[in-house]
Each structure stands twice: as structure tokens, then as C-alpha cells.
Image: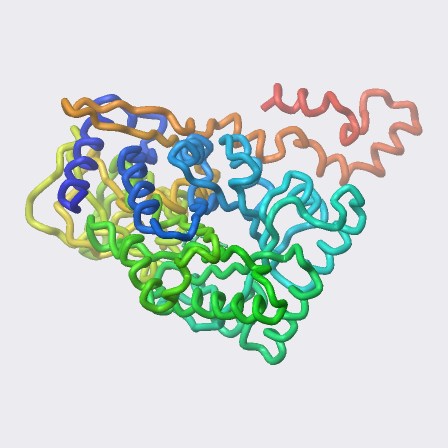
Length: 480
Ligand SMILES: *Cc1c(COP(=O)(O)O)cnc(C)c1O
């Protein structure tokens, strides 16, 4: 779909979401996901990688670990990359079978490795200590014959350098991820490690992400490919039979076009690593942002407008809790803002330089600063575009603001919209429960221990030690 076509769909979704009351109290902020947009991108991703090489496209769960989204992606033929027990649980709940999962993480525990081995999930090891740990896990599982059921790879850091955003650059000299390939002796040690372990069959490189140009990412994949060739030559057989090339494709946050897009990335790879696709290696990808970013938006109401120092400010309900990266690193993660009237119709009118502020109690809580937009009024609707990945799905619990509801939508051919709930807004009861409500008296009990013990010794049954009293939680819940 063209950029203009995509914008028309999103505009219509805003109008219908407003009409259907999705932005009404008590939740004047929601996330919206364009289901057809997501499916279109997934189809283009599969088409772009069409080649003699078999490919498993996994979705990086951290980009949007919402179970209905993961299930939609599973139904669209994708696998899932997980990097924590929570993401693994979400992926299993979404229905991914273990053979479609990849488990990455720089900090896997023994238990997590055991679980992955037992389920037959593909694992990418991050460092030498983890490799030894897996050796021990396998040795302690005689049933495995010392061989894991799923593919096991080693993540390498090709050290090809940084992109425009330091915190997003995984392949600098000192990046924390994988085994640093250019460090003295690293390649020789890797060759030896593979030679000793016939079950090590994969190399993994995730070079990215936002801010990294395509040739830089391709250079990282090329380094992993060349190492695989070297290892296979050294052991005299194609022991490495798959390459996990990670995700990291940047996304266009400046306009509606989906660019550079997976096809351009594949073209770059074909140029820089031509033999990657010849079928000798099967491939795994782990795209996150480039699958979902363009298909989501945050919608919120303008609660108040004011002016300070000559700067008009619109106060909305979308701030750091739903857009943490943008608020804390506005230069690196600027978002496009759409302004709609109270009925969800795009507002026109001369551009006025304004701030779009959020509800959090710190001064920097701005979704956009000094942006030229139609002058906003209370009741208007603001859209933060391109937020389908890493925004409302990566909630930041500042000020105990609730996780917003998320809805998916489709527009029928006759222009009717259908919405489906993806996640309900977090309730106040849930916030209180997650804030230790069950232990409301625990600290007071700790402070009172001596006095309470004295009273107990005196036989004062009126002052029980509530820290160990299972009923105390209920008492406190009723009292609050
Ligand atoms: C975050 C991450 C991804 C996804 O990155 P995107 O930039 O969202 O495509 C893939 N693989 C690993 C190992 C990651 O950490």
C-alpha cells in the first residue's frame, strides 16, 4: 500500500474509534493496530526472502509481546524470537510450537537453558560461560545423549561499528552482545568450540537496529557468513547448516512510506553476501520494529490547553508511560503527530508551534516539542504515529499510570470498521494489587517487631504479628 493509502486508512480508523467511544473515559489513551497492515507487511517479508534458502521468519517478541498480536503473526506463518521467560510464556500462550521459537538473551539462567533443551527450542548462546553451562546441562541429562533436541547457535558480534543511535547499536567494539569476533583469538576459539561440539550448528548475528544503515547491517551478516564458511571448512563438513541473521531493519519515522522495507534489505544482502541465499544454509530472521511499527498508533484526547512563555501547550494522556523512548531521547526517537477534532476528523488550519505534553509529573514529559501543528483545543484527538512496536507494548509505569487498552482494527471494503480488543486497560485495582497491596502491613510490622514481641510475651492477643498472618492482606484490602 502506498503511503497516502496507509494514511487514509489510519485517518478513517481514528474517526471510527472516536465514534465508537474507544477514547471515552476512563481511558482517554489507547493503542490501535492495523491488522491488514500487519498482514501485508508479513506477506511482503516472506516474498522478499523467497530464494533456494529455507527461511524461518521469527518476530522479536519484545517489539510487541501482546498475545493476540503474536497469534496473528503465528497464523501468518511467522515464528517468534523470545529473550526472557515472560516472552517465552507469551509466545507459548499465543500458540507457537517450540520448533518455531528462538530463545535469545544475554542472561539465561540454568533453569531457562534446561527448559529450552527439554522443549527443543532453538537457542543462541551469548558467551563462553553460557556455552560451558550448556555443556553441563546436557551432561546432566543422559536422556539427551549429550545432544540438544533443537538447534543451538552462538551469537557473534561482528564489531562493524555503530549506527546513529548509540544505545541501539549492537555491533560496536564493546557491545555487550555475543562473542566479539575481532577480539584477538576469538575466531580461532570459535572454530575449536564448534569442532569439539558437533551439535553446534548455527551462527547468530543481530546487527542493528534503528539508526543503522543497510550496508552496515549487511557487513555484519557477511562477517557471520564468512565465519560459518571458515568453520565448516575447518571441520570438513557442513556442520553449520543455518544462519540466524537477526532483525534490526530500521523504520521510516518521517512519513507514511514503509521504507527502506524488507525487499531493499534483501537486495543489499544479495549484493554484499551473494551466496547467503544459495540454499546451503537455512536462514532465520528476527525482525521486530520493521514488522509492526508502521501499523500502530497511540490515540489520546487533549485534556487542557495552556500557554507558557509564549508557547502553546496541549496536555494529553500520552506521555512517557506509552512513549518512554521518545520522551527521554527526543532527538533519537521523534514521532509524527496527527491532530484531529473532537469527532476524529483531521484538523486543518495554520501551523502553530506547540508542545504536546503527557500526564507524567516531570517537565520533560513531552511527546513532541515545538512542533508546528493546527492549534489544539480541549477535546481534540492526538495521534502518535508509527508506534506499533516498542511503544504501548513496552509500558513504563511512571506515576502508576495504567497500561492503556489496545484495539486491533480492519476496514471492510464498504468502509465499515471492525475493532477487536487486544488488551484491556489496566484497572486501578490491578495497579494497587501489583503495588504490594497484599503486604500492606509488612514494613510497619518489621518496625514494630520488638514491641509486638514484647506484647505477645505479655499475652496481648490484640496485637498479632501481621507480617506472617495470611489474613492481614485481606484486612488491609478491605480497609483501603
Ligand atoms: C531486539 C532484537 C531483535 C529485533 O530488533 P528490531 O530492531 O526490532 O528488528 C532481534 N533480535 C534480537 C536478538 C534482539 O535483541
